[in-house]
Image 1 (tube, one colour):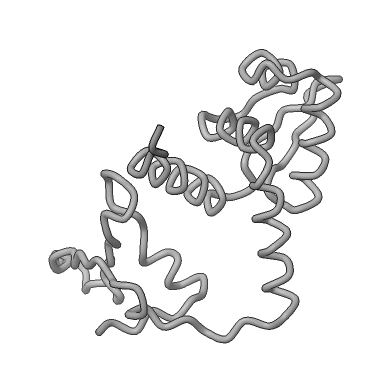
Image 2 (image 1 turned 30 degrees about the horizontal axis):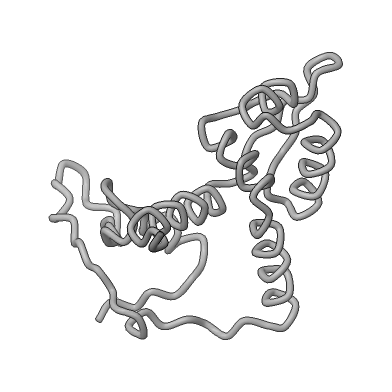
Length: 154
């Protein structure tokens, strides 16, 4: 089994493979090949639950993670984040895409910023929002894919 400790090196080596959620991990080469040498084949694996070792997390990290999931529990915030999976958007564009009121969108964006989920860049008087990093967008898309795979029985 491949050692999959977390860290910036491993996040760079492992990226999701194209396709649907749960389609596995792509492991890139762990060493830089000598000049002129071709990299080896890409290893594809689909770890089962319990196969990937998780490092110990402190109580503060667990609490921050719970706050992220609380933020994702609101359908309005999920709709806002789903707009941002398509790229940067202004408050006006988010309002137009979601159908939510401008004050409500602004309130949710403030909370998402406080959790470091989205960034804002100011262009004149306009605020342009984007995902701070790709982790949460992957969680969102994977959760939506999961929901589509297991629709509620009517």
